[in-house]
Image 1 (tube, rainbow, N blue to C red):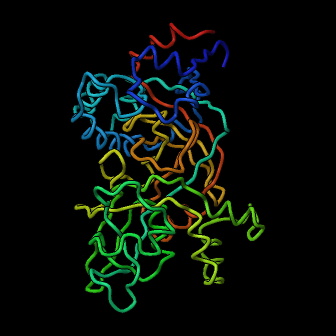
Image 2 (spheres, rainbow, N blue to C red):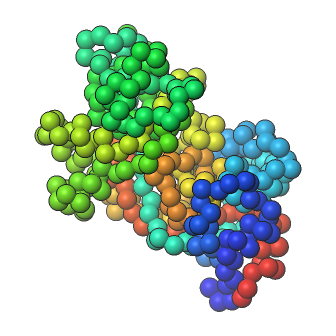
Image 3 (cartoon, rainbow, N blue to C red):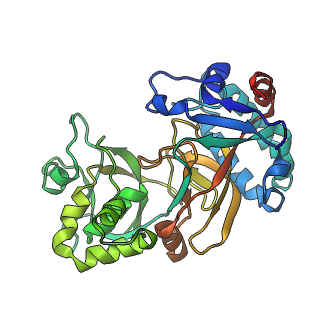
Length: 365
Protein backbone atom coordinates (compact mmCIF):
# COMPACT_ATOMS: atom_id res chain seq x y z
CA UNK A 1 0.00 0.00 0.00
CA UNK A 2 1.49 3.34 -1.00
CA UNK A 3 2.64 5.48 1.88
CA UNK A 4 2.17 2.81 4.55
CA UNK A 5 3.88 3.24 7.89
CA UNK A 6 5.62 0.52 9.86
CA UNK A 7 5.59 0.70 13.65
CA UNK A 8 8.12 -1.35 15.58
CA UNK A 9 6.66 -2.90 18.70
CA UNK A 10 9.04 -1.22 21.21
CA UNK A 11 7.61 2.14 20.09
CA UNK A 12 4.11 0.72 20.33
CA UNK A 13 4.66 -0.55 23.85
CA UNK A 14 6.24 2.69 24.98
CA UNK A 15 3.44 4.73 23.45
CA UNK A 16 0.75 2.67 25.15
CA UNK A 17 2.55 2.19 28.47
CA UNK A 18 1.67 -1.47 28.20
CA UNK A 19 4.63 -3.36 29.70
CA UNK A 20 3.61 -5.45 32.71
CA UNK A 21 6.59 -6.61 34.74
CA UNK A 22 8.67 -9.45 33.36
CA UNK A 23 7.87 -10.62 29.86
CA UNK A 24 8.87 -14.05 28.59
CA UNK A 25 8.89 -12.65 25.06
CA UNK A 26 11.24 -9.72 25.71
CA UNK A 27 13.93 -10.74 23.25
CA UNK A 28 11.37 -11.44 20.52
CA UNK A 29 9.41 -8.23 20.82
CA UNK A 30 12.03 -6.29 18.86
CA UNK A 31 11.06 -8.38 15.84
CA UNK A 32 7.37 -7.53 16.11
CA UNK A 33 6.02 -4.70 13.99
CA UNK A 34 2.69 -3.37 12.75
CA UNK A 35 1.86 -1.79 9.39
CA UNK A 36 -1.17 0.46 9.12
CA UNK A 37 -3.83 -0.86 6.75
CA UNK A 38 -7.40 -0.27 5.66
CA UNK A 39 -10.33 -2.65 5.84
CA UNK A 40 -10.56 -2.34 2.04
CA UNK A 41 -7.08 -3.89 1.82
CA UNK A 42 -8.18 -7.08 3.59
CA UNK A 43 -9.32 -9.74 1.14
CA UNK A 44 -12.60 -11.31 2.23
CA UNK A 45 -13.46 -8.67 4.81
CA UNK A 46 -16.78 -7.74 3.22
CA UNK A 47 -17.86 -11.40 2.90
CA UNK A 48 -17.20 -12.48 6.49
CA UNK A 49 -19.90 -13.26 9.04
CA UNK A 50 -19.07 -10.31 11.26
CA UNK A 51 -21.94 -11.10 13.60
CA UNK A 52 -20.25 -14.38 14.60
CA UNK A 53 -16.99 -12.58 15.42
CA UNK A 54 -18.95 -9.85 17.20
CA UNK A 55 -20.63 -12.45 19.44
CA UNK A 56 -17.23 -13.89 20.37
CA UNK A 57 -15.94 -10.38 21.11
CA UNK A 58 -18.91 -9.73 23.41
CA UNK A 59 -18.09 -12.98 25.20
CA UNK A 60 -14.53 -11.70 25.75
CA UNK A 61 -15.99 -8.50 27.14
CA UNK A 62 -17.24 -10.50 30.12
CA UNK A 63 -13.60 -10.93 31.18
CA UNK A 64 -12.41 -7.49 30.06
CA UNK A 65 -15.09 -5.71 32.07
CA UNK A 66 -13.87 -7.40 35.28
CA UNK A 67 -10.35 -5.97 34.94
CA UNK A 68 -8.86 -2.84 36.48
CA UNK A 69 -9.57 -0.01 34.00
CA UNK A 70 -6.24 1.65 34.85
CA UNK A 71 -4.20 -1.44 33.99
CA UNK A 72 -2.99 -2.53 30.59
CA UNK A 73 -5.00 -5.29 28.99
CA UNK A 74 -3.85 -8.77 29.97
CA UNK A 75 -0.80 -10.00 31.84
CA UNK A 76 1.57 -9.58 28.91
CA UNK A 77 2.37 -6.53 26.77
CA UNK A 78 -1.08 -5.35 25.81
CA UNK A 79 -2.55 -3.39 22.95
CA UNK A 80 -3.97 -0.59 25.10
CA UNK A 81 -5.29 0.33 28.53
CA UNK A 82 -8.18 -1.76 29.82
CA UNK A 83 -10.38 1.34 30.03
CA UNK A 84 -10.29 1.83 26.26
CA UNK A 85 -11.38 -1.74 25.65
CA UNK A 86 -14.09 -1.48 28.29
CA UNK A 87 -15.40 1.51 26.38
CA UNK A 88 -15.59 -0.67 23.24
CA UNK A 89 -17.37 -3.31 25.26
CA UNK A 90 -19.99 -0.82 26.42
CA UNK A 91 -20.51 0.22 22.82
CA UNK A 92 -20.84 -3.45 21.82
CA UNK A 93 -23.51 -4.03 24.48
CA UNK A 94 -25.61 -1.38 22.77
CA UNK A 95 -25.00 -2.65 19.24
CA UNK A 96 -27.04 -5.22 17.36
CA UNK A 97 -25.31 -8.14 15.72
CA UNK A 98 -26.80 -6.90 12.44
CA UNK A 99 -24.50 -3.89 12.74
CA UNK A 100 -21.38 -5.88 13.62
CA UNK A 101 -19.43 -4.95 10.48
CA UNK A 102 -20.09 -1.24 10.99
CA UNK A 103 -19.14 -1.60 14.67
CA UNK A 104 -15.66 -2.93 13.85
CA UNK A 105 -15.12 -0.45 11.01
CA UNK A 106 -16.21 2.52 13.15
CA UNK A 107 -14.39 1.81 16.39
CA UNK A 108 -11.29 -0.07 15.22
CA UNK A 109 -8.47 0.20 12.71
CA UNK A 110 -6.58 -2.77 11.23
CA UNK A 111 -2.82 -3.16 11.49
CA UNK A 112 -0.91 -5.80 9.51
CA UNK A 113 1.18 -7.95 11.84
CA UNK A 114 4.72 -8.90 10.84
CA UNK A 115 7.39 -10.68 12.80
CA UNK A 116 10.56 -12.72 12.64
CA UNK A 117 10.33 -16.45 12.19
CA UNK A 118 7.69 -16.49 9.46
CA UNK A 119 4.07 -17.46 9.93
CA UNK A 120 2.33 -20.63 10.97
CA UNK A 121 -1.31 -21.36 11.76
CA UNK A 122 -2.36 -24.64 13.31
CA UNK A 123 -5.57 -25.88 14.89
CA UNK A 124 -7.01 -27.55 17.94
CA UNK A 125 -10.33 -29.10 18.87
CA UNK A 126 -12.30 -30.47 21.77
CA UNK A 127 -11.48 -34.18 22.12
CA UNK A 128 -13.86 -36.73 23.58
CA UNK A 129 -12.34 -39.48 25.72
CA UNK A 130 -13.83 -42.48 27.49
CA UNK A 131 -13.26 -42.62 31.23
CA UNK A 132 -14.30 -43.39 34.77
CA UNK A 133 -14.26 -41.78 38.21
CA UNK A 134 -12.42 -44.82 39.55
CA UNK A 135 -9.44 -46.88 38.43
CA UNK A 136 -11.08 -50.07 37.31
CA UNK A 137 -11.29 -52.31 34.24
CA UNK A 138 -9.77 -50.55 31.23
CA UNK A 139 -9.61 -47.16 32.99
CA UNK A 140 -5.93 -47.19 33.94
CA UNK A 141 -4.46 -43.83 32.92
CA UNK A 142 -5.03 -40.85 35.22
CA UNK A 143 -6.00 -37.29 34.38
CA UNK A 144 -4.50 -35.16 37.15
CA UNK A 145 -5.54 -31.94 38.84
CA UNK A 146 -2.87 -29.28 39.47
CA UNK A 147 -0.53 -30.19 42.34
CA UNK A 148 -0.21 -27.70 45.18
CA UNK A 149 3.00 -27.02 47.06
CA UNK A 150 5.15 -29.29 44.89
CA UNK A 151 8.15 -27.59 43.28
CA UNK A 152 9.75 -28.26 40.94
CA UNK A 153 7.11 -30.35 39.22
CA UNK A 154 8.28 -33.61 37.61
CA UNK A 155 8.40 -34.06 33.85
CA UNK A 156 6.17 -36.33 31.78
CA UNK A 157 8.38 -39.42 32.06
CA UNK A 158 8.53 -39.14 35.85
CA UNK A 159 4.77 -38.56 36.16
CA UNK A 160 4.01 -41.51 33.90
CA UNK A 161 6.37 -43.58 36.08
CA UNK A 162 4.33 -42.74 39.18
CA UNK A 163 5.85 -39.54 40.60
CA UNK A 164 2.38 -38.27 41.62
CA UNK A 165 1.01 -41.57 42.92
CA UNK A 166 -0.58 -41.45 46.35
CA UNK A 167 -1.21 -37.70 46.33
CA UNK A 168 -4.92 -37.94 45.54
CA UNK A 169 -4.60 -35.77 42.44
CA UNK A 170 -6.52 -38.04 40.07
CA UNK A 171 -9.60 -36.36 38.59
CA UNK A 172 -10.53 -39.19 36.27
CA UNK A 173 -9.15 -42.33 34.67
CA UNK A 174 -9.19 -42.98 30.91
CA UNK A 175 -8.66 -46.06 28.81
CA UNK A 176 -5.98 -44.88 26.37
CA UNK A 177 -2.63 -43.18 27.14
CA UNK A 178 -2.43 -41.77 23.60
CA UNK A 179 -5.86 -40.15 24.00
CA UNK A 180 -4.65 -38.69 27.31
CA UNK A 181 -1.52 -37.32 25.60
CA UNK A 182 -3.53 -35.57 22.89
CA UNK A 183 -5.87 -34.18 25.55
CA UNK A 184 -2.76 -32.52 26.99
CA UNK A 185 -1.88 -31.13 23.58
CA UNK A 186 -5.37 -29.69 23.11
CA UNK A 187 -5.57 -28.30 26.64
CA UNK A 188 -9.27 -29.06 27.16
CA UNK A 189 -11.82 -31.71 26.30
CA UNK A 190 -14.63 -33.93 27.46
CA UNK A 191 -14.63 -37.34 29.12
CA UNK A 192 -17.67 -39.55 28.66
CA UNK A 193 -18.11 -41.63 31.78
CA UNK A 194 -19.12 -45.26 31.84
CA UNK A 195 -22.53 -44.28 33.27
CA UNK A 196 -23.21 -42.06 30.25
CA UNK A 197 -22.45 -38.72 31.90
CA UNK A 198 -19.86 -36.30 30.60
CA UNK A 199 -17.22 -34.23 32.37
CA UNK A 200 -15.89 -31.02 30.83
CA UNK A 201 -12.17 -30.54 31.51
CA UNK A 202 -10.27 -27.28 31.27
CA UNK A 203 -6.63 -26.31 31.50
CA UNK A 204 -5.47 -25.81 35.11
CA UNK A 205 -1.73 -25.39 34.57
CA UNK A 206 1.43 -27.03 33.35
CA UNK A 207 4.56 -28.50 34.90
CA UNK A 208 6.81 -25.80 33.44
CA UNK A 209 8.92 -28.13 31.34
CA UNK A 210 9.47 -27.30 27.65
CA UNK A 211 7.05 -28.51 24.99
CA UNK A 212 8.54 -30.87 22.39
CA UNK A 213 6.62 -31.79 19.25
CA UNK A 214 6.61 -35.54 18.74
CA UNK A 215 5.58 -34.89 15.15
CA UNK A 216 8.81 -32.99 14.53
CA UNK A 217 10.74 -35.81 16.19
CA UNK A 218 9.16 -38.39 13.87
CA UNK A 219 10.08 -36.22 10.90
CA UNK A 220 13.65 -35.88 12.20
CA UNK A 221 13.93 -39.65 12.51
CA UNK A 222 12.61 -40.15 9.00
CA UNK A 223 9.61 -42.11 10.28
CA UNK A 224 7.00 -39.82 8.68
CA UNK A 225 7.55 -37.39 5.81
CA UNK A 226 7.03 -33.72 6.65
CA UNK A 227 4.23 -33.45 4.09
CA UNK A 228 2.42 -36.40 5.69
CA UNK A 229 2.64 -35.41 9.34
CA UNK A 230 -0.73 -35.04 11.05
CA UNK A 231 -2.50 -36.22 14.16
CA UNK A 232 -3.83 -39.19 12.19
CA UNK A 233 -0.38 -40.23 10.94
CA UNK A 234 1.13 -39.83 14.41
CA UNK A 235 -1.64 -41.93 15.94
CA UNK A 236 -1.13 -44.60 13.30
CA UNK A 237 2.61 -44.70 14.03
CA UNK A 238 1.99 -45.04 17.77
CA UNK A 239 -0.62 -47.76 17.28
CA UNK A 240 1.73 -49.77 15.05
CA UNK A 241 4.63 -49.56 17.55
CA UNK A 242 3.19 -49.90 21.07
CA UNK A 243 6.60 -50.83 22.52
CA UNK A 244 8.07 -47.51 21.31
CA UNK A 245 5.06 -45.29 22.03
CA UNK A 246 5.80 -44.51 25.69
CA UNK A 247 9.38 -43.51 24.90
CA UNK A 248 8.29 -41.16 22.13
CA UNK A 249 5.58 -39.51 24.25
CA UNK A 250 8.08 -39.02 27.10
CA UNK A 251 10.23 -36.83 24.85
CA UNK A 252 7.60 -34.13 25.38
CA UNK A 253 8.51 -33.28 28.96
CA UNK A 254 5.62 -30.80 29.19
CA UNK A 255 2.61 -32.08 31.16
CA UNK A 256 -0.82 -30.49 31.54
CA UNK A 257 -3.10 -30.59 34.57
CA UNK A 258 -6.87 -30.13 34.42
CA UNK A 259 -9.89 -28.96 36.34
CA UNK A 260 -13.57 -29.76 36.02
CA UNK A 261 -15.66 -27.05 34.42
CA UNK A 262 -19.34 -26.23 34.46
CA UNK A 263 -21.11 -25.15 31.29
CA UNK A 264 -21.56 -26.15 27.69
CA UNK A 265 -18.16 -25.61 26.11
CA UNK A 266 -14.43 -25.50 26.73
CA UNK A 267 -12.96 -22.43 28.37
CA UNK A 268 -9.80 -20.77 27.07
CA UNK A 269 -7.01 -19.01 28.92
CA UNK A 270 -9.05 -15.79 29.01
CA UNK A 271 -11.56 -17.58 31.19
CA UNK A 272 -14.48 -17.42 28.74
CA UNK A 273 -16.07 -20.18 26.63
CA UNK A 274 -14.43 -20.74 23.26
CA UNK A 275 -16.37 -20.23 20.03
CA UNK A 276 -15.69 -22.77 17.25
CA UNK A 277 -14.18 -21.07 14.23
CA UNK A 278 -13.83 -17.71 15.98
CA UNK A 279 -11.56 -18.31 18.97
CA UNK A 280 -7.83 -18.07 18.35
CA UNK A 281 -4.98 -19.15 20.62
CA UNK A 282 -2.15 -16.62 20.37
CA UNK A 283 1.27 -15.93 21.84
CA UNK A 284 0.35 -13.75 24.80
CA UNK A 285 3.77 -12.13 24.72
CA UNK A 286 2.37 -10.16 21.78
CA UNK A 287 -1.42 -10.04 22.06
CA UNK A 288 -3.83 -9.56 24.94
CA UNK A 289 -6.94 -11.70 25.30
CA UNK A 290 -10.04 -10.21 23.75
CA UNK A 291 -8.23 -8.50 20.88
CA UNK A 292 -9.77 -9.08 17.40
CA UNK A 293 -7.43 -10.42 14.72
CA UNK A 294 -8.17 -11.00 11.05
CA UNK A 295 -6.68 -14.29 9.90
CA UNK A 296 -5.91 -15.29 6.31
CA UNK A 297 -4.66 -18.83 5.76
CA UNK A 298 -5.58 -22.16 4.09
CA UNK A 299 -7.27 -25.22 5.57
CA UNK A 300 -5.86 -28.74 5.08
CA UNK A 301 -8.52 -29.44 2.44
CA UNK A 302 -7.35 -26.42 0.42
CA UNK A 303 -10.24 -24.14 1.33
CA UNK A 304 -9.30 -20.53 2.14
CA UNK A 305 -9.79 -19.35 5.71
CA UNK A 306 -10.42 -15.61 5.86
CA UNK A 307 -12.26 -14.42 8.92
CA UNK A 308 -12.21 -12.28 12.01
CA UNK A 309 -11.09 -14.13 15.12
CA UNK A 310 -10.86 -13.18 18.79
CA UNK A 311 -7.74 -13.93 20.87
CA UNK A 312 -9.13 -16.00 23.74
CA UNK A 313 -6.54 -18.68 24.43
CA UNK A 314 -2.85 -19.53 24.38
CA UNK A 315 -0.58 -22.57 24.45
CA UNK A 316 3.04 -23.45 25.13
CA UNK A 317 3.61 -24.31 21.46
CA UNK A 318 2.21 -20.97 20.23
CA UNK A 319 5.29 -18.77 19.92
CA UNK A 320 5.60 -15.86 17.53
CA UNK A 321 3.75 -12.78 16.36
CA UNK A 322 2.29 -14.31 13.18
CA UNK A 323 1.32 -17.54 14.89
CA UNK A 324 -2.05 -18.85 15.96
CA UNK A 325 -4.08 -21.93 16.80
CA UNK A 326 -7.62 -22.03 15.43
CA UNK A 327 -10.25 -23.60 17.67
CA UNK A 328 -12.32 -25.78 15.33
CA UNK A 329 -14.80 -27.05 17.92
CA UNK A 330 -15.80 -30.68 18.43
CA UNK A 331 -16.63 -33.61 16.17
CA UNK A 332 -14.97 -35.54 13.37
CA UNK A 333 -14.52 -32.58 11.00
CA UNK A 334 -12.96 -30.49 13.75
CA UNK A 335 -10.57 -33.32 14.66
CA UNK A 336 -9.53 -33.80 11.03
CA UNK A 337 -8.93 -30.10 10.46
CA UNK A 338 -7.10 -29.58 13.73
CA UNK A 339 -4.97 -32.68 13.28
CA UNK A 340 -3.71 -31.70 9.84
CA UNK A 341 -3.69 -27.89 10.06
CA UNK A 342 -0.23 -26.35 9.52
CA UNK A 343 -0.36 -23.49 7.03
CA UNK A 344 1.39 -20.16 6.60
CA UNK A 345 -0.74 -17.06 6.44
CA UNK A 346 -1.18 -13.41 7.31
CA UNK A 347 -2.86 -11.58 10.16
CA UNK A 348 -4.10 -8.12 11.06
CA UNK A 349 -4.83 -6.90 14.58
CA UNK A 350 -7.75 -4.53 15.14
CA UNK A 351 -6.90 -1.75 17.61
CA UNK A 352 -9.17 1.00 18.90
CA UNK A 353 -9.29 3.78 16.33
CA UNK A 354 -8.43 6.45 18.91
CA UNK A 355 -5.13 4.70 19.60
CA UNK A 356 -4.50 4.29 15.88
CA UNK A 357 -4.37 8.09 15.50
CA UNK A 358 -1.47 8.24 17.97
CA UNK A 359 0.23 5.28 16.34
CA UNK A 360 0.00 6.86 12.91
CA UNK A 361 1.45 10.11 14.19
CA UNK A 362 4.41 8.31 15.79
CA UNK A 363 5.17 5.87 12.96
CA UNK A 364 7.86 6.57 10.35
CA UNK A 365 6.75 6.72 6.67
